[in-house]
Length: 299
Ligand code: HMG
Ligand code: MG
Image (cartoon, rainbow, N blue to C red; front, top):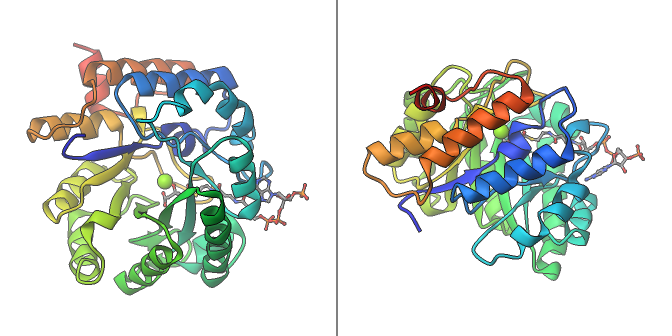
């Protein structure tokens, strides 16, 4: 295990916002390639309403096809679920870890999952109750840690309240999402200074979107403050259909490049990752969103 843990979210967060239909076999090949890069935690898909996110309506087929990988004990393939219905589908399809998600803020909560923050916490408690009887692990996401696309700036107290609630519900780790990618290292410092007084760094992960080019700077600041788990997406794919203007996630290639230059071990092949980022960008006919990936591919 390396010094830093990377949760690859490309197949879920990366693809959910893409309007053209991505064939199931491309999704499966993406996951297989990412696994070959040495990524051991790959968020594979989501079981949400297919009316809300049509792109991931083939979750069942994707999971069926990656079943041999899912059976390898050193690998984890969490799947995003918004409610008990999603948990049941995940369970029926052999999933052993789900990710639940809530917003720190009301506006995005309504637009993303059609309920208030408190209602979403109640849904999470119902998922948690059933997940524990099924032996399914639960990771948690908090969105809009710095700002909400509808409500404006978020206060650290809002983030701390829901993070604590998710931990109390049984999530083993909470991934803190800068959904719109507006945060800077100054915001990271302000949030973590308050948060780490009450929640250990070992229970937290950083999930930065790169809309304003701040994601890698935010990782470095978080690392300095003790965070050791980061979410990222190959080729910087990503965005959220319910957060207008939000661009891609932090690119996994950029993250691995930075960590390696910091002398940290990741157990990931940067060369394989760069090839995978080039391949998926070409498949989707979009520019490679990773600066390091594009630069290394051009050498
Ligand atoms: P709703 O319309 O209020 O709920 O949606 P509903 O219970 O009335 O269900 C509507 C329909 O969806 C019904 O079907 C349900 O059966 C079905 P119908 O009777 O109309 O045919 N349904 C489901 N189908 C499959 N799987 C399910 C499921 N649940 C209901 N689990 C709901 C509420 C939560 C379902 C909806 O709002 C939804 O699915 N939202 C998902 C939105 C989403 O996926 N957003 C992107 C992920 S979050 C994100 O990207 C942020 C993150 O990356 C961190 C960050 O960056 O901040 C995590
Ligand atoms: Mg995200």
